[in-house]
Picture: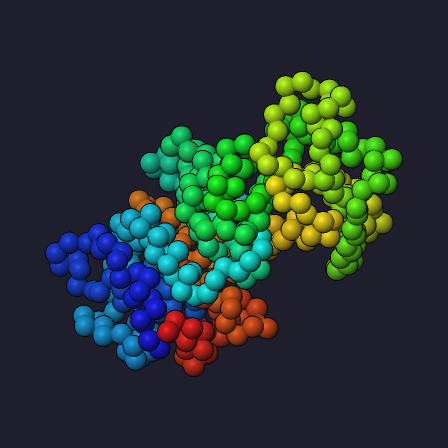
Length: 377
Protein backbone atom coordinates (compact mmCIF):
# COMPACT_ATOMS: atom_id res chain seq x y z
CA UNK A 1 0.00 0.00 0.00
CA UNK A 2 1.38 3.41 -0.98
CA UNK A 3 0.90 6.33 1.41
CA UNK A 4 1.33 9.05 -1.20
CA UNK A 5 -2.38 9.94 -1.09
CA UNK A 6 -2.45 10.01 2.73
CA UNK A 7 0.75 12.07 2.81
CA UNK A 8 -0.69 14.59 0.37
CA UNK A 9 -3.70 15.08 2.64
CA UNK A 10 -1.98 15.15 6.04
CA UNK A 11 1.65 16.15 5.50
CA UNK A 12 0.92 19.81 6.35
CA UNK A 13 -0.76 18.92 9.67
CA UNK A 14 1.18 20.71 12.46
CA UNK A 15 2.75 18.36 15.01
CA UNK A 16 1.80 19.64 18.50
CA UNK A 17 4.50 17.62 20.25
CA UNK A 18 7.96 18.79 21.29
CA UNK A 19 11.29 17.21 22.16
CA UNK A 20 11.43 13.49 22.84
CA UNK A 21 7.64 13.26 22.55
CA UNK A 22 8.16 13.35 18.76
CA UNK A 23 10.01 10.03 18.67
CA UNK A 24 7.13 8.50 16.69
CA UNK A 25 6.41 9.97 13.26
CA UNK A 26 3.06 11.84 13.31
CA UNK A 27 1.97 10.61 9.89
CA UNK A 28 2.75 6.98 10.80
CA UNK A 29 0.87 7.37 14.07
CA UNK A 30 -2.22 8.64 12.23
CA UNK A 31 -2.01 5.80 9.71
CA UNK A 32 -1.92 3.26 12.53
CA UNK A 33 -4.89 4.91 14.28
CA UNK A 34 -6.93 5.09 11.06
CA UNK A 35 -6.12 1.49 10.16
CA UNK A 36 -7.02 0.35 13.66
CA UNK A 37 -10.33 2.27 13.49
CA UNK A 38 -11.13 0.63 10.15
CA UNK A 39 -10.39 -2.76 11.73
CA UNK A 40 -12.65 -2.27 14.74
CA UNK A 41 -10.58 -0.35 17.31
CA UNK A 42 -12.52 2.31 19.24
CA UNK A 43 -10.11 3.92 21.71
CA UNK A 44 -6.48 4.93 22.14
CA UNK A 45 -5.88 1.76 24.15
CA UNK A 46 -7.31 -0.24 21.24
CA UNK A 47 -5.02 1.60 18.79
CA UNK A 48 -1.95 0.67 20.87
CA UNK A 49 -2.98 -2.98 21.26
CA UNK A 50 -3.74 -3.23 17.55
CA UNK A 51 -0.34 -1.74 16.68
CA UNK A 52 1.41 -4.38 18.79
CA UNK A 53 -0.62 -7.30 17.45
CA UNK A 54 -0.40 -6.17 13.80
CA UNK A 55 3.16 -4.85 13.70
CA UNK A 56 3.80 -7.22 10.82
CA UNK A 57 1.04 -5.58 8.78
CA UNK A 58 2.38 -2.07 9.39
CA UNK A 59 5.97 -3.12 8.79
CA UNK A 60 5.11 -3.62 5.12
CA UNK A 61 4.53 0.12 4.50
CA UNK A 62 5.72 2.03 7.62
CA UNK A 63 9.27 2.47 8.93
CA UNK A 64 8.35 2.28 12.65
CA UNK A 65 11.85 3.55 13.52
CA UNK A 66 11.12 3.53 17.25
CA UNK A 67 8.68 0.65 17.35
CA UNK A 68 4.94 1.03 17.79
CA UNK A 69 3.39 3.91 19.79
CA UNK A 70 1.94 3.37 23.26
CA UNK A 71 -1.54 4.18 24.51
CA UNK A 72 -0.21 7.38 26.13
CA UNK A 73 1.31 8.50 22.83
CA UNK A 74 -1.96 8.07 20.93
CA UNK A 75 -3.89 9.79 23.70
CA UNK A 76 -1.47 12.73 23.88
CA UNK A 77 -1.49 13.31 20.13
CA UNK A 78 -5.28 13.32 19.78
CA UNK A 79 -5.63 15.58 22.83
CA UNK A 80 -3.17 18.13 21.42
CA UNK A 81 -3.85 18.09 17.67
CA UNK A 82 -5.44 21.27 16.35
CA UNK A 83 -8.93 20.05 15.36
CA UNK A 84 -9.41 22.81 12.77
CA UNK A 85 -6.16 21.84 11.03
CA UNK A 86 -7.14 18.16 11.30
CA UNK A 87 -10.54 18.99 9.74
CA UNK A 88 -8.84 20.78 6.82
CA UNK A 89 -6.72 17.68 6.21
CA UNK A 90 -9.93 15.63 6.40
CA UNK A 91 -11.33 17.74 3.54
CA UNK A 92 -8.25 17.11 1.38
CA UNK A 93 -8.51 13.40 2.19
CA UNK A 94 -12.13 13.30 1.01
CA UNK A 95 -11.24 15.15 -2.19
CA UNK A 96 -8.55 12.56 -2.90
CA UNK A 97 -10.86 9.67 -2.04
CA UNK A 98 -13.31 10.76 -4.70
CA UNK A 99 -15.76 13.51 -5.56
CA UNK A 100 -18.60 13.92 -3.12
CA UNK A 101 -20.96 13.45 -6.02
CA UNK A 102 -23.78 15.53 -7.35
CA UNK A 103 -27.11 15.77 -5.62
CA UNK A 104 -28.00 16.28 -1.99
CA UNK A 105 -25.73 17.44 0.83
CA UNK A 106 -27.47 16.82 4.14
CA UNK A 107 -26.58 19.01 7.13
CA UNK A 108 -27.35 17.71 10.61
CA UNK A 109 -26.08 17.93 14.19
CA UNK A 110 -25.22 15.17 16.65
CA UNK A 111 -24.15 15.12 20.31
CA UNK A 112 -21.39 12.79 21.54
CA UNK A 113 -23.18 11.77 24.71
CA UNK A 114 -20.24 10.44 26.75
CA UNK A 115 -17.87 13.32 25.93
CA UNK A 116 -18.98 15.36 28.96
CA UNK A 117 -16.43 15.93 31.72
CA UNK A 118 -17.95 15.91 35.22
CA UNK A 119 -14.75 17.05 36.89
CA UNK A 120 -14.42 20.09 34.64
CA UNK A 121 -18.20 20.53 34.46
CA UNK A 122 -17.94 20.47 30.70
CA UNK A 123 -20.91 19.87 28.44
CA UNK A 124 -20.76 17.05 25.87
CA UNK A 125 -19.33 17.85 22.48
CA UNK A 126 -21.73 18.32 19.59
CA UNK A 127 -20.83 18.41 15.90
CA UNK A 128 -22.54 19.44 12.70
CA UNK A 129 -21.78 17.17 9.76
CA UNK A 130 -22.13 17.56 6.02
CA UNK A 131 -23.03 14.25 4.35
CA UNK A 132 -23.11 13.60 0.60
CA UNK A 133 -26.14 11.35 0.23
CA UNK A 134 -25.29 9.98 -3.23
CA UNK A 135 -21.85 8.66 -2.25
CA UNK A 136 -22.56 8.29 1.48
CA UNK A 137 -19.37 10.18 2.30
CA UNK A 138 -18.83 12.64 5.13
CA UNK A 139 -17.43 15.79 3.52
CA UNK A 140 -17.06 18.04 6.55
CA UNK A 141 -17.54 18.51 10.28
CA UNK A 142 -17.69 21.49 12.65
CA UNK A 143 -17.92 21.37 16.45
CA UNK A 144 -20.04 23.47 18.78
CA UNK A 145 -20.68 23.68 22.51
CA UNK A 146 -23.71 25.56 23.80
CA UNK A 147 -21.84 26.36 27.02
CA UNK A 148 -19.23 28.26 25.00
CA UNK A 149 -21.87 30.41 23.33
CA UNK A 150 -21.85 28.31 20.16
CA UNK A 151 -24.95 27.09 18.36
CA UNK A 152 -25.73 24.49 15.74
CA UNK A 153 -26.88 27.28 13.41
CA UNK A 154 -23.55 29.14 13.55
CA UNK A 155 -21.56 25.92 13.33
CA UNK A 156 -23.49 24.90 10.21
CA UNK A 157 -22.80 28.25 8.57
CA UNK A 158 -19.10 27.96 9.35
CA UNK A 159 -19.10 24.48 7.83
CA UNK A 160 -20.99 25.57 4.69
CA UNK A 161 -18.46 28.35 4.15
CA UNK A 162 -15.76 25.69 3.72
CA UNK A 163 -17.65 23.58 1.18
CA UNK A 164 -17.97 23.75 -2.59
CA UNK A 165 -21.74 23.82 -3.04
CA UNK A 166 -21.79 24.43 -6.79
CA UNK A 167 -24.81 22.63 -8.27
CA UNK A 168 -25.65 20.91 -4.97
CA UNK A 169 -28.95 20.88 -3.12
CA UNK A 170 -28.38 21.45 0.60
CA UNK A 171 -31.01 19.98 2.93
CA UNK A 172 -31.40 20.74 6.61
CA UNK A 173 -33.86 20.59 9.49
CA UNK A 174 -36.09 23.46 10.55
CA UNK A 175 -33.49 24.93 12.92
CA UNK A 176 -31.53 25.97 9.82
CA UNK A 177 -34.50 27.56 8.07
CA UNK A 178 -32.87 30.97 8.45
CA UNK A 179 -32.46 33.74 5.89
CA UNK A 180 -28.74 34.08 6.61
CA UNK A 181 -28.18 30.36 6.08
CA UNK A 182 -30.19 30.37 2.85
CA UNK A 183 -28.23 33.37 1.56
CA UNK A 184 -24.93 31.65 2.37
CA UNK A 185 -25.92 28.49 0.47
CA UNK A 186 -26.93 30.55 -2.55
CA UNK A 187 -23.72 32.60 -2.40
CA UNK A 188 -21.68 29.36 -2.42
CA UNK A 189 -23.39 28.26 -5.63
CA UNK A 190 -25.89 25.82 -4.17
CA UNK A 191 -29.64 25.60 -3.63
CA UNK A 192 -31.49 24.93 -0.42
CA UNK A 193 -34.34 22.64 0.64
CA UNK A 194 -35.19 23.56 4.23
CA UNK A 195 -37.76 22.05 6.58
CA UNK A 196 -40.40 24.52 7.71
CA UNK A 197 -41.80 24.30 11.24
CA UNK A 198 -43.14 26.50 14.00
CA UNK A 199 -39.79 28.25 14.58
CA UNK A 200 -40.88 30.33 11.55
CA UNK A 201 -44.45 30.75 12.86
CA UNK A 202 -45.83 33.24 10.33
CA UNK A 203 -44.50 31.44 7.26
CA UNK A 204 -45.35 28.01 8.67
CA UNK A 205 -48.92 29.10 9.38
CA UNK A 206 -49.46 30.45 5.87
CA UNK A 207 -47.91 27.44 4.11
CA UNK A 208 -49.85 24.95 6.27
CA UNK A 209 -53.10 26.79 5.55
CA UNK A 210 -52.32 26.88 1.82
CA UNK A 211 -51.73 23.11 1.60
CA UNK A 212 -54.70 22.36 3.87
CA UNK A 213 -57.08 23.41 1.10
CA UNK A 214 -58.21 20.29 -0.79
CA UNK A 215 -59.03 22.28 -3.91
CA UNK A 216 -55.50 23.73 -3.96
CA UNK A 217 -53.90 20.28 -3.59
CA UNK A 218 -56.03 18.89 -6.41
CA UNK A 219 -54.45 21.34 -8.83
CA UNK A 220 -50.80 20.75 -7.80
CA UNK A 221 -48.23 18.27 -9.20
CA UNK A 222 -47.93 15.21 -6.95
CA UNK A 223 -45.87 12.06 -6.55
CA UNK A 224 -46.14 8.98 -4.32
CA UNK A 225 -43.66 6.49 -2.88
CA UNK A 226 -44.28 3.43 -0.69
CA UNK A 227 -41.85 1.51 1.53
CA UNK A 228 -42.69 -1.75 3.24
CA UNK A 229 -40.36 -3.51 5.64
CA UNK A 230 -40.48 -5.22 9.05
CA UNK A 231 -44.27 -5.14 9.04
CA UNK A 232 -44.32 -1.38 8.60
CA UNK A 233 -45.82 0.26 5.50
CA UNK A 234 -45.10 3.94 4.88
CA UNK A 235 -46.70 5.85 2.04
CA UNK A 236 -45.43 9.33 1.23
CA UNK A 237 -47.31 11.69 -1.05
CA UNK A 238 -45.67 14.93 -2.02
CA UNK A 239 -47.12 18.07 -3.57
CA UNK A 240 -45.17 21.08 -4.84
CA UNK A 241 -46.27 24.59 -5.67
CA UNK A 242 -44.23 26.86 -7.95
CA UNK A 243 -46.72 29.72 -7.90
CA UNK A 244 -45.67 31.71 -4.84
CA UNK A 245 -47.17 35.08 -5.69
CA UNK A 246 -49.92 34.50 -3.14
CA UNK A 247 -47.38 34.82 -0.32
CA UNK A 248 -47.32 38.56 -0.92
CA UNK A 249 -50.95 38.79 -1.97
CA UNK A 250 -54.35 39.18 -0.39
CA UNK A 251 -54.47 35.56 0.78
CA UNK A 252 -51.71 36.24 3.25
CA UNK A 253 -52.98 37.20 6.71
CA UNK A 254 -49.59 38.33 8.07
CA UNK A 255 -48.42 41.66 6.68
CA UNK A 256 -44.97 41.28 8.26
CA UNK A 257 -44.25 37.86 6.71
CA UNK A 258 -40.47 37.33 6.25
CA UNK A 259 -39.64 35.16 3.23
CA UNK A 260 -36.52 33.24 2.34
CA UNK A 261 -34.40 34.60 -0.54
CA UNK A 262 -34.82 33.30 -4.10
CA UNK A 263 -37.57 30.89 -3.04
CA UNK A 264 -38.74 28.86 -6.03
CA UNK A 265 -41.16 26.31 -4.65
CA UNK A 266 -42.99 25.12 -1.57
CA UNK A 267 -43.69 21.50 -0.79
CA UNK A 268 -45.62 19.28 1.59
CA UNK A 269 -45.12 15.58 2.25
CA UNK A 270 -47.97 13.64 3.78
CA UNK A 271 -46.59 10.51 5.40
CA UNK A 272 -48.97 7.69 6.35
CA UNK A 273 -47.56 4.83 8.43
CA UNK A 274 -49.43 1.56 9.00
CA UNK A 275 -47.94 -0.73 11.63
CA UNK A 276 -49.57 -3.40 13.83
CA UNK A 277 -53.06 -2.23 12.99
CA UNK A 278 -52.33 1.42 13.77
CA UNK A 279 -52.37 4.16 11.17
CA UNK A 280 -50.75 7.58 11.69
CA UNK A 281 -50.50 10.50 9.30
CA UNK A 282 -48.16 13.48 9.55
CA UNK A 283 -47.32 16.39 7.29
CA UNK A 284 -43.91 17.97 6.68
CA UNK A 285 -43.41 21.30 4.91
CA UNK A 286 -40.39 22.56 2.98
CA UNK A 287 -39.24 25.63 1.10
CA UNK A 288 -36.65 25.43 -1.70
CA UNK A 289 -34.71 27.74 -3.96
CA UNK A 290 -34.75 25.08 -6.70
CA UNK A 291 -37.97 24.60 -8.75
CA UNK A 292 -38.29 20.90 -7.95
CA UNK A 293 -40.77 18.57 -9.58
CA UNK A 294 -42.85 16.50 -7.18
CA UNK A 295 -40.84 13.29 -7.64
CA UNK A 296 -37.51 15.13 -7.26
CA UNK A 297 -38.85 16.83 -4.13
CA UNK A 298 -39.79 13.50 -2.55
CA UNK A 299 -36.41 12.05 -3.47
CA UNK A 300 -34.46 15.00 -2.05
CA UNK A 301 -36.43 15.05 1.20
CA UNK A 302 -35.88 11.31 1.54
CA UNK A 303 -32.16 11.71 0.78
CA UNK A 304 -31.82 14.07 3.73
CA UNK A 305 -32.70 11.27 6.14
CA UNK A 306 -29.85 9.15 4.76
CA UNK A 307 -27.65 11.04 7.21
CA UNK A 308 -29.52 9.26 10.01
CA UNK A 309 -29.13 5.66 8.81
CA UNK A 310 -26.05 6.18 6.64
CA UNK A 311 -24.02 8.09 9.23
CA UNK A 312 -25.44 8.64 12.73
CA UNK A 313 -26.76 5.09 13.08
CA UNK A 314 -23.47 3.60 11.85
CA UNK A 315 -21.42 5.79 14.19
CA UNK A 316 -23.55 4.82 17.19
CA UNK A 317 -24.13 1.14 16.47
CA UNK A 318 -21.06 0.05 14.47
CA UNK A 319 -18.43 2.48 15.86
CA UNK A 320 -20.03 2.70 19.34
CA UNK A 321 -19.62 6.48 19.28
CA UNK A 322 -22.27 7.20 21.91
CA UNK A 323 -20.19 5.31 24.47
CA UNK A 324 -16.82 6.83 23.52
CA UNK A 325 -15.42 8.25 26.76
CA UNK A 326 -12.47 10.34 25.58
CA UNK A 327 -13.09 13.75 27.19
CA UNK A 328 -9.83 15.68 27.55
CA UNK A 329 -8.83 18.72 25.51
CA UNK A 330 -9.34 18.18 21.75
CA UNK A 331 -9.55 14.39 22.08
CA UNK A 332 -13.32 13.99 21.55
CA UNK A 333 -13.40 16.17 18.44
CA UNK A 334 -10.30 14.66 16.83
CA UNK A 335 -11.44 11.09 17.45
CA UNK A 336 -14.84 11.97 15.97
CA UNK A 337 -13.00 13.12 12.84
CA UNK A 338 -10.95 9.89 12.83
CA UNK A 339 -14.12 7.76 12.99
CA UNK A 340 -15.52 9.61 10.00
CA UNK A 341 -12.24 9.12 8.13
CA UNK A 342 -12.50 5.38 8.79
CA UNK A 343 -16.13 5.33 7.66
CA UNK A 344 -15.21 7.15 4.43
CA UNK A 345 -12.54 4.52 3.72
CA UNK A 346 -14.97 1.69 4.42
CA UNK A 347 -18.00 2.99 2.49
CA UNK A 348 -16.77 2.62 -1.12
CA UNK A 349 -14.62 -0.46 -0.58
CA UNK A 350 -15.93 -3.98 -1.23
CA UNK A 351 -19.50 -2.95 -2.12
CA UNK A 352 -22.19 -5.40 -1.13
CA UNK A 353 -20.70 -6.03 2.32
CA UNK A 354 -22.03 -4.15 5.32
CA UNK A 355 -19.82 -1.73 7.22
CA UNK A 356 -20.04 -3.93 10.29
CA UNK A 357 -18.81 -6.98 8.37
CA UNK A 358 -16.04 -5.00 6.70
CA UNK A 359 -14.71 -3.88 10.08
CA UNK A 360 -14.89 -7.37 11.55
CA UNK A 361 -13.22 -9.06 8.57
CA UNK A 362 -10.54 -6.36 8.45
CA UNK A 363 -9.83 -7.08 12.10
CA UNK A 364 -9.58 -10.81 11.45
CA UNK A 365 -7.61 -10.86 8.21
CA UNK A 366 -4.60 -8.84 7.06
CA UNK A 367 -5.45 -9.65 3.44
CA UNK A 368 -8.98 -8.32 3.82
CA UNK A 369 -7.67 -5.21 5.60
CA UNK A 370 -5.29 -4.59 2.68
CA UNK A 371 -8.20 -4.81 0.24
CA UNK A 372 -9.95 -2.03 2.17
CA UNK A 373 -6.88 0.13 2.69
CA UNK A 374 -5.70 -0.46 -0.88
CA UNK A 375 -7.77 2.57 -1.97
CA UNK A 376 -5.19 4.81 -0.26
CA UNK A 377 -2.84 4.96 -3.24
